[in-house]
Image (cartoon, rainbow, N blue to C red; front, top):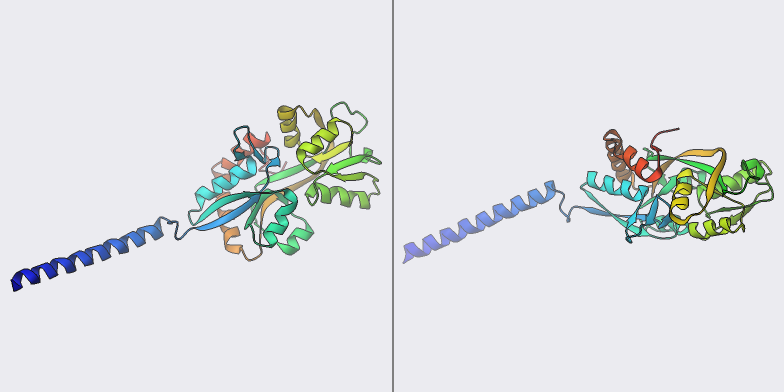
Length: 272
């Protein structure tokens, strides 16, 4: 009887040891594979009304160049999970500052005010060409110098707004700046002649013409050809570095170039 009891105790001890070993292996595998318990969720702030960049498609899916770039980066960084949170463009900076989001993906160009408060990653993911945009039947406006006394619509706090505000002051242009509530509203206002011009991009114009028959055209020289980055809080240096590493790999693999051609109509991942 004692022999049976000892044998039963020995089996139990062996079973516990085996379970412990399995548990240790599971924990080890979990760490190696980047299990959810080790993965940090990154809330990505973006919009829904920027044609070809971040918008809701006909199937109700959030997509576009910036969105798909983030999804490609997500696949490269197993220690992070990127989750989108959509909002009005004008709310993005405040949401980042108050840490309601961790990252902005919305064609963010560098300007002094943003640099003072936030952190840009170092590797750009495309170049953003701003141009004067008018209704296709408008032959009066041929360049930015023809905007004197004209109503020009931009989105508040955008680089288009920053650019035209600065240009207006420095060159005494005399343009009347109108802050549009949305891209759709600005397109409608332009089509009806309630405003005279937009400060936009060739790829936004192409999208608007194709999707909503906006009947727009770009005129004159490129006003600004600035590089685009992701925007983070200043303490997110590790995340910023990892994003740069992922972007460099994606560029070498041709992924960034292909996404740019697909969504923006040309390879804007390199300087023109």
